[in-house]
Length: 517
Image (cartoon, rainbow, N blue to C red; front, side, top):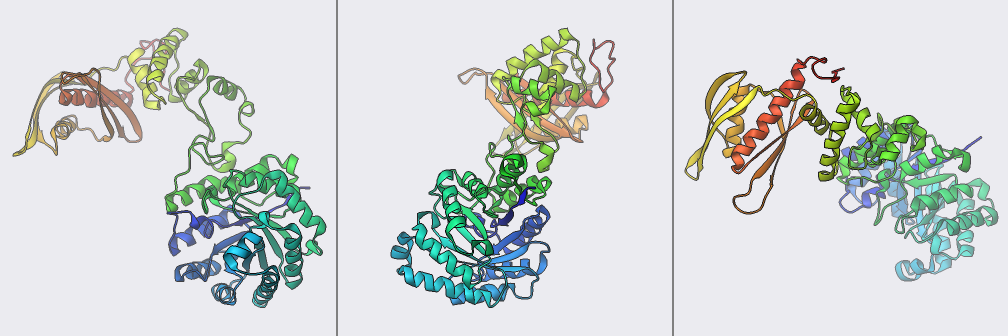
């Protein structure tokens, strides 16, 4: 049977120490409630002594969040311990987490203490915290650069004083998995009465080893891992909660351990923390990055379409995502291309597919990623030519410093000539507002881009637009030496596509295999 590893989430304390990641009280309460839904065992809600805001956050979370144990950090000082208790008192499940360095580097240069003084202080503060709460955690800060013999002595003393959890921090991200594993094994084998306490680990990511070090510790008997959502934290961050949880869940056969994390809540929690802190998750981040379940290689896409396990060791649904993402680009193969078209509702003959695939490859060489609306455009342009409901017959635009931009537009709409004049904030805006009024479109302009096809002042310009209406998105393209005319052509091209897809008024027989499903 798998051992259950406690997850101690410190997103609201150590995570907030990321530059720019400061959160207000309401935001902390919101995240804490989501962490409870995620199923973490302990929430380190803050450092109560550090500020009135942190005190209030700890107090509110302790009173309002059900499920996890709520913890406050406290330095090994009487005033810190007392303040932590003031914030926590009255709540059902609380913990005080106190810490003091055991490394000679810290004791000599930062704390100006001898080893004997540090040992005495650690014991006194654990006893003080134990006078308030049953659940006390002690951390020998900078443990991985401490003398193991002295650290063992401190751990024995704080366990005797009442610490129920002893947390071993790699404070500066210095250790390696092999070293850290030996350190935890040494604690388990040499510290008297270690079975009276849970061994915890708190690893920083300065060398990119926080998760690896934490998992190595689990193999050697650690029963708690301290981590953060998205791995945020001081400097290079902390061990990532989602990587710890999914690492243990996916490789339960190897670690013989698991957590109580409800993994389906992982993506939602990651997005919430990213939104509140403003810290964007890198695309290639394990588990929660936008590319974590995205497949670009044609070989990978082909294998995945045949059997998911060929290239996915986890199901996207397991972390709260709907499905994997097939990224269409220059490396994509014919199998994935056909699959994407069929998902969009198009079934092509082999000849049509070959023709469309050639066009797709040409486009993919020009773009990093080919989107759904690009595929629609390929089908419409190569297989089912989009009829032009709206045809530009004439465009005249006036603009200047002393005159509001004005557009005179003449369109052929369903074979009938229509003329209208309108104004806007600029010449392109004036043309677009007038065209929108004439075509009675309810679409929204999502993007507008201009690119010179050739060099020089006489260059032909190409305009690309993306528009959306009722959840349907499409692109339009137009080229002309007059950029305003090119803009109008691009807009009308997109509107014609939108009208075509909306109407679905085409005969499958005449479309040589093109079927709207």
